[in-house]
Image (cartoon, rainbow, N blue to C red; front, side, top):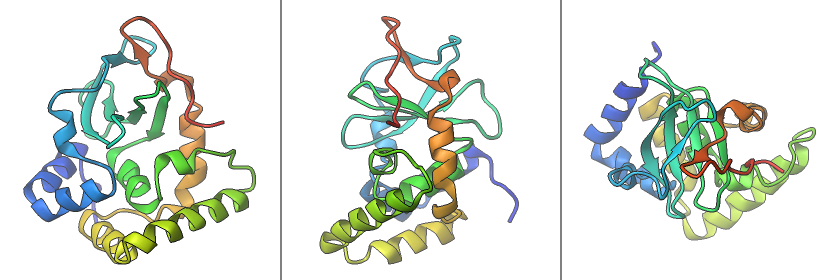
Amino acid sequence: MPRMRDQDLLRQIRDERWIAELLVQFDFDLRRAENGPVEAVRLPDGGALEMIAGDASGGAFLLAGPPADNRPVVYAGSEGEGGLIAADLRTALALVVGLPSLHDATSMPIGDGAALREWLAFADDEIREDWPELDDDRARLRDALGLPEPAGLLAGLHAAAADERYRPVSELGDVYEPMTS
């Protein structure tokens, strides 16, 4: 399957209502972008950030830089934490859909990955108690959007989150805290 541009992927999500509705359950809600992020943010070099979705905690998913086929995706949390999460929207969605949460996935150092994977499996088990269709819903979204499995993406998430060039900066010049510990 040829790589779809970010804007085409967003259009597909908007056009196929079931996808947009299911992504809300994964805490990626396009409607939250209507009013912009809780506070205006920019990149450290002054570059623009365009909000495309939000989560229930007030966090924002933003495309970084000037319009292009595929743009880096930055997360700006409502508690002042944030950073780069993926090189493009498809990878960001793979993380959002495939992990219990970005917060869980960045809550501890990656190390060799074993402890983090164990923690994420525990968090998934907790979610399945209230959402038994979790794995089926993940598979439906992966198939519909052509998303990769998230397992191989954890190291990339941690490396991306450490990239200071994408750390959000508030209007007052406050630099957001890193998402990783």
